[in-house]
Image 1 (tube, rainbow, N blue to C red):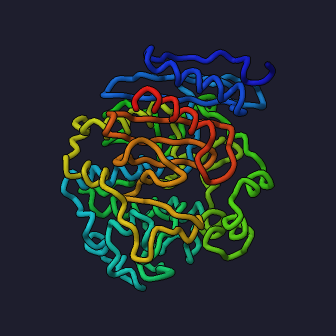
Image 2: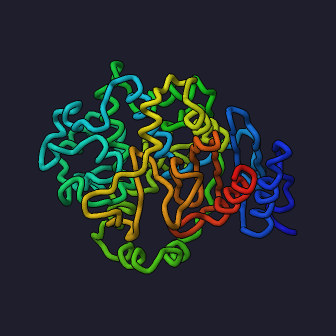
Length: 396
């Protein structure tokens, strides 16, 4: 078969997880995969570590063991881990007001917003009114001042609205306020999670990472992307000024981590959608959270909070941005109808185009999948679904 299927799948799987290898191969043979990787940790052991296909469609360069790729909103899960670690260290209470830690936040109707509401997409801050571009993102003090002046679009705690890009910036400033070292979220993640666990994942991609380590994304095109949306969401995507359009498409928009000359932006933190790394890193991080978190010093109380069911806003779980029911909790997505993963207590985050990671304490499992061929739509990607179904066939 022509195309990426001619590239041999690399890596290893434990014998009982052979169905995952078959599903990964099928992704290339039948589901249009270009290049990608999947990894599974179970009870602390790496039981699946596979990669294959093409890293760069223009040159035909193969996907290597250490190839990294932009994972868009799958970054949210890694960013939420930083807040969870801060919670375990006693630096914040999920039920406290954000303004207790960030006094300037208490303006324009945000005075009573709790940390839980903010992290769970219930603050009504899903789009910026103030201008936010690369210059503002690069200046954390300037960005913090803009966010302090933002006004919720409705009473916080009453509605869901996916904070596609904004959430990570609010998380970053909150973490800067509570961390004794006042580190940025990207730096904190690197020093307190990535380095101790040996993760090749960056929320602030360094200048010295060579382009040859990075997979180039193959975009589906605007028409295919729009046609992949459910009709109610498509209508909003085509409506200027809608919640969807403002959350995803402008100021700064979800493509701000891209860079034409360097593949991805360097030294720029976009904690809701700018993470770059390997499936191995994502699975390893979630695997630690799925097995007690002793490597990071996580407290049982923190893990219990992450595994607890989502607490919906007062008007129900319907999402004003995504135009469908959604279950969010403490920076993560929870299993829900139409996007089911792991068992009831699982938590994770999908990314635009297909990337996905999650922790499932019921099976002691951490999962990561990354790809450079962007899928369409906002529902679970068929390649990810096939891989997770193969895992479930083994673990139950």
